[in-house]
Length: 191
Image 1 (spheres, rainbow, N blue to C red):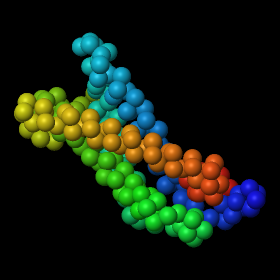
Image 2: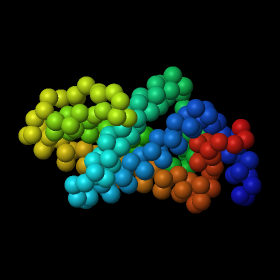
Image 3: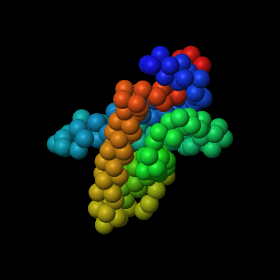
């Protein structure tokens, strides 16, 4: 029975190699950036903390650029439909959760870095990408606005981390419990 699922999975339409690359690159970058954000938040003021904050901002801008590329790719390259057998086996709430989670992730791909950029601008700390190019301030400097934006950036980052965990858990459920081969659509390999 397991071999039937595997052969069925390879017959399932898959994402393009570009979509796979953008998915995994963005996923790994988000995990690393979230970890660095957690680590640096509790550091005492020091050159190391300033260095990590600058790196965090550069990575956030890079993630924003990757998100734009990923969205453009998705808008111009329709993703494969869920296989009919998988869709029929999923209760209606799982189908809604599947689509809703993807839409919410895309929203957060943009919201988290834009809130961070706005917070940095409001706090009076411009982003100098790679230490070479100063990006325009997203908003005018305002301590009150900075105080309002900081928790929004943090909460949206936590929301994205939680949603990424749910996404990973769902993929692992499909792979190891349902054994429907759905995860193989996003893994490079044989077509």
